[in-house]
Structures are given as structure tokens and as C-alpha cells.
Length: 386
Image (cartoon, rainbow, N blue to C red; front, side, top):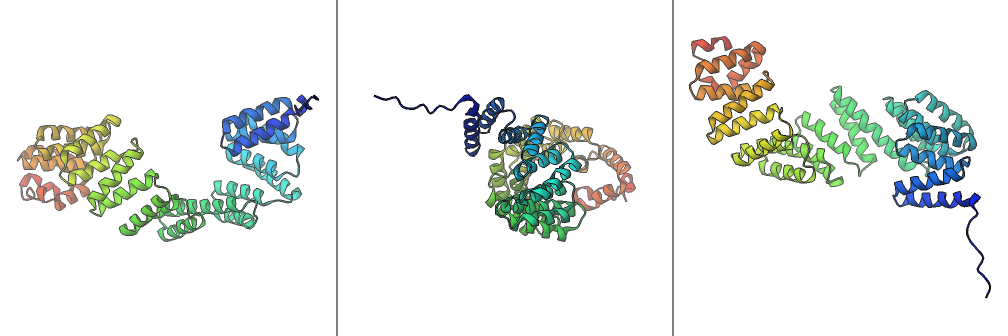
């Protein structure tokens, strides 16, 4: 019987096997395994360009930027016509190491010598986007849009550009151009929930509550686990008087992200309006365990206690809110109203005089708008509020 010829690779060629195994691990999403395989290949073939490139890119993905840089520089030098190598080095320098000038130098040199330029235009677009040069970034992504090798990345880049531009415009008070930018981002990347959330925020600011809720719902159709969309939708439902729907939305958010900021306080306020004070108090106490300095929570808790008849505890909570923030007018309002209800006019006068000292205009507006406090307007001691 003859022996089967050995198929074991010689040690000098084993790096190829490790490189191929690492690439397959990457395809399977096993990044840790891929990294180990690439490092093993690097030990066996420290000057092999493909190994340098693979190991350098993986180190960059791991956040080991300083370790990745020498490998990628050597890969670019050894593979002068490699789009992948140049793009990786430019991304590292410009987006992770704060060296945009060097990144542009790498890109411009590569654009003169390589044929498949589209991925380089994508990286250039990302660098320009980082600088806030939206028009130039769009132009760069547009140059890559029709190339099959980079179409998806270019489309995603364009969507990001419009989304970030929309945020900038919104912050500048330019609502209509911001809405256009967010809609353009959503059209370019239909499965991305972020632009729809941003649409909802701007629509809400414009008073278009129903359209804002539609935008948040559209975001959740694309990503049912988006906590910002859920929180904003619950808030919009609360403002629209859809209290039951708001509670269901907040409950869903609590199940999904129990640590999401302020969700318990928001849900407690809705429950308070529904006269479910016991659940409201329980949620506020939970929130105060997380953040004992939450002024709005102390205020809402005080009001909830007052509504259940525990007036003493309610007053303590409202006073605690004002200890944390003497300018918090919701607490001032509720505490003054409590004192007036109890005919404790000296205490009410002290609270309102301090509020008037801090903000005369707002204090006067508070008195004029509140039916409970308006009963004291004819009293001589409160004439300072007029």
C-alpha cells in the first residue's frame, strides 16, 4: 500500500493558510479569532504586504491605532497600487489619529497611481464630513456613487452628510432646510432610523405634533429597538393627550432599556395626570435612587404626595427640589399653591418673594396664569407681584 502524499504546507508558506483562515473568520463575524490568526501570520511573515495590510486593518478595528500605523504605512509602500491599503491608512490618519493633512497626502498620492479610485473618494468624503464641509463631502461621495465597488459606502456617506447637515441647520434655527436634509438622508438610506428621529424633533419644534409622531413611528418601523425614538414618541403622545398610548410606549422602552435616562420620571408624570399616584410615586422613587439630585423628580414626587393626601411629605419633597435648584419654577409654583391652599400666606409670600427676586417677569406670569394662586392677588402683601 502506497503512502498518501503529505499536504502539510512548509513553515515558510503557513502564513498563507493563516491569512485565509483569518479572512474567513472575518466573513463569519469572528473578529477576535481573525485578529489572532492575522497576528500569527505576521509573526511568520513580518514583511509580507498582504499580511501587513490584514493585521494593520484589524488592529485599527480594535482601536490599536498606534500599533496599526507602521503596518499600514509599510503595506502602502509595498503595494503602491492598492486602493485598499491607501484607503485604510488615510482612514486611520484622518479619522482616528487627528492627522487630516497626512491623510489627504496619502489620498492624493494614491489617486494619481491607482485605477479603482472610488473607495478613495469615499474616504475623502468622510474626512470632509468630519470637517463639516458638507458640499465638498457630497461631491466626493458623488464621485464614488456609480462605482459598484463603492456604491453602498458612497450612498451611506451621502446619507450621513445630509443627516449631519440637517442637525447643524436645526441648531441654527433653519428648520425648513433641516427637514429637507433629513428627508434626503432618509431617502438615501431607507433602513436607517436616525433621520426619522431627527425629522420628528424638528417637526415637534414647529408644533406639527401629529407629523412628529408619524416620523417617530417610521423610525421604529426601521429599528424597533431605537430608544430615542421610543422616548420621543412617548413624550409626543403625552403632549397630545394620548396618555394610555404614552404609557404603553414608555413601558416598552423600560423593558428594552431599563437604564434609559428620565424615562421613569416621564412615565410618572403621565400616571399622575391619570390619577394613578401610587404607580407614579413608585417610579419616581426608583428614579431618585438612580439620580438623587433629579430636581424635576423631587417636584413631581412632592405633587404626587400632596394629591394622595400626604401633604407633609409632599412639602418636604418640594423643599428638597428648591434646595437643589432655587430657580426651578415648577417647584416654586407647586409649593406656593400648597401654602395658599392651606392659608399659610406668610410661607407663600416668602416663596413668591424669593421667586420674584430671581425672576420678576416669570413670577408675575406664574401668578396670572394659575387659578389657585390668583385668589391672593387682591391681598395687599402680594401687590409686589403686579
